[in-house]
Image (cartoon, helix red, strand yellow):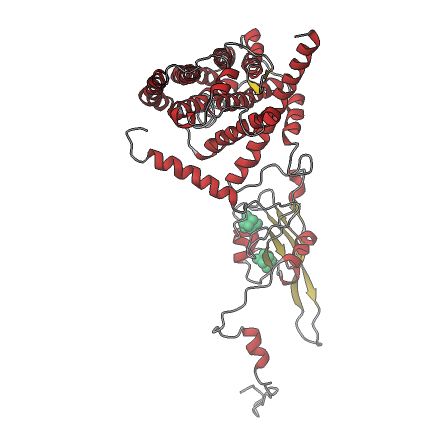
Length: 321
Length: 185
Ligand code: SF4
Ligand code: SF4
């Protein structure tokens, strides 16, 4: 790979990372509004408020950047970046087109999992550094949550990699067959639930539960730093949706995929993002202990069962790959 | 999924409800672009029909937060016929409602015996300074145009008093006969 290509790929990745979350955010604005019988933004940009998030961004930039006096200033400033950058890194490893990912890694699945779990550290650090009791409670909640979903998430991904016989995301897509939809269904459900918990979105938004603990770890944040946390949330949705479609829906596979592979990737990812939004609008928030109970009594057994089923399947087929 | 039986059906029902709402028409009213359809008896603002007001002060006294200001003076009307008695009447100088205090309870409208105060659905009188919410007679009078006509009477109801009076046959002028002693009978 020449230097120019590296630069081009990095720039493209950055553009996608800035654009796709905005797209998801705007979709959430409108879809959520209509699901609640409202119209949502209508003015910014003229046509159905398409520029609402751009306007929001301009507003965030103008706001005063406050660092609380008692805060651990270095950590406080670092936290938004810590939350945001892992998702950018993870996005790089996701294959978008046959034979193309921004960074094609042999151990892509492992890499993406590792990168996305760093993101949660941003929340923890933010909660600790804010020197605010609500922020700290929120951080503790997200730490508890972390234990609940990391294990099922890893087990679900392990099952897919076992089925495909490779850790490379591109390899998983190539090995994918439509009947895997059924074979890997329990794992897919576990992955979806765990992904929502990792993203800290309703019904698993206990760490930021605005009705209980103000805004959790983000309580003390203002302006651009706060916007970075929001961007991290929507960037997270993009990454998780694309990852889900890569692992369970065959990524770029589809009719005419040597030409339109990238469109299939985006389309499948978008559908999953819509599903995440739909879930957010429809379901109420759980309690932290309910998530623990759900994780240990339902998700992990289900993920283990899936792993066993996958293993049996692989052995019966004489070891695919 | 869990030990409660109703969890999964409940979750699906939630999804179905939001999906159904999305396909329906929204209930948002696009206010500055489209006028809202207010019910005729909306309590937007209180309008004053100054001609009817006798400065009796009942409204000002009943107002729970004393936000109605009335100034009036008495005027003497000279007797119409020689030897008659001069009459006095109240002239309304100032009538103001401070909408920064008013809590839209409607007591003033209810209590006015002379139908001088009315509810109007007009609501666009926001100000940038709270002190500008004290509205005087002219402004209150201007809102009379937006007061909706009173609701029609029920089909079986008796005619209003004014209409009955209009229909009654003209009465002959009363002739006062005087007895020889000169005193009215
Ligand atoms: S509506 Fe109530 S508060 Fe307002 S002016 Fe009339 S009596 Fe006073
Ligand atoms: S109660 Fe009616 S008539 Fe009397 S002062 Fe108030 S508005 Fe005028």
